[in-house]
Image 1 (cartoon, rainbow, N blue to C red):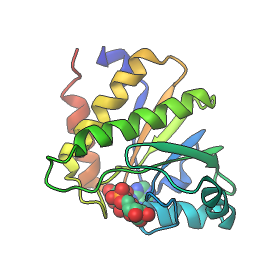
Image 2 (image 1 turned 30 degrees about the vertical axis):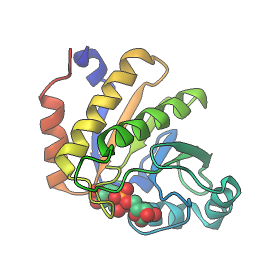
Image 3 (image 1 turned 120 degrees about the vertical axis):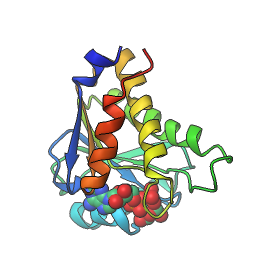
Image 4 (image 1 turned 90 degrees about the vertical axis):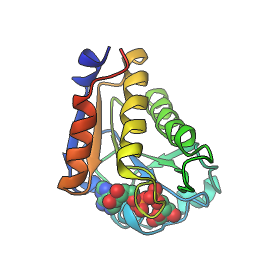
Length: 177
Ligand code: APR
């Protein structure tokens, strides 16, 4: 499964707000307010209309996703997903994180986005260990791509060379089948 699927997966190192694709994913908080990290960068680059659009939605539970326009970003859509806060690994963090990736890809497909860029959800302020989070990210994306032909390109947009190496190692490891 993973060889064909992996042709649709890329790793990009740098700022997600500069990635040109149909949808970018925001590692949001449950209130959908502008925060720090990648969320702050996305809100700054999109302009104040993004916070207004998020306020209209009103919030998003952990593990779910919502979408808005992307305003001044090069993307067409922002998909806001709320990753779990790491609490040691026994509080459904892995399944909640997988649900973020699944829900975001479902919205992208429904909205006609053919390309989507993900940051490393939950691995900053929320403290999810990068290697474990990367395994969840790659596994979840591979599974959805195998059954969703409308999604042509998934970009893992990571900050820094260490994260790139972790993602490359996970992709090299191959998929479940
Ligand atoms: N582009 C791509 N990746 C980025 C960027 C950026 N501009 N800025 C930060 N990152 C990376 C971080 O290095 C980290 O690996 O995004 C990953 C996720 O980190 P956070 O942004 O801290 O997201 P998360 O851990 O999910 O925490 C979410 O942080 O800012 C608040 O409002 C947000 O409360 C929410 C919480």
